[in-house]
Length: 84
Image (cartoon, rainbow, N blue to C red; front, side, top):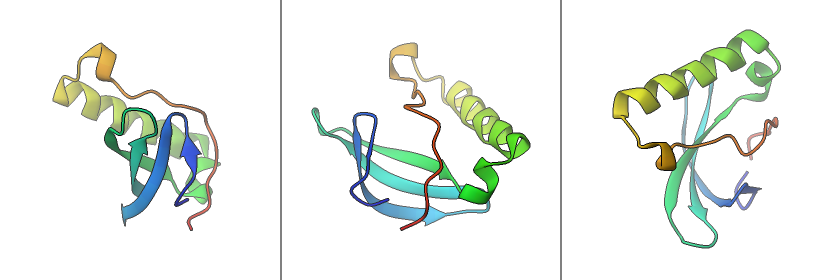
């Protein structure tokens, strides 16, 4: 994953891992804004129920933090990634 481009972001380093996925630090390649990107583990990404739970958690966090619409994260693409 390190060095991978996801949408406008370049993955810099792995921050941690949990039961459903891993979290990576990434940097917007143009404006150099740092973000965290959470990626589902491949075995869960193939399961529709787990994938739905993953997106529900992201939406709940977005709503809890009241992030303005222009700052809300979007899914660049749906893809399965192997940990590196």
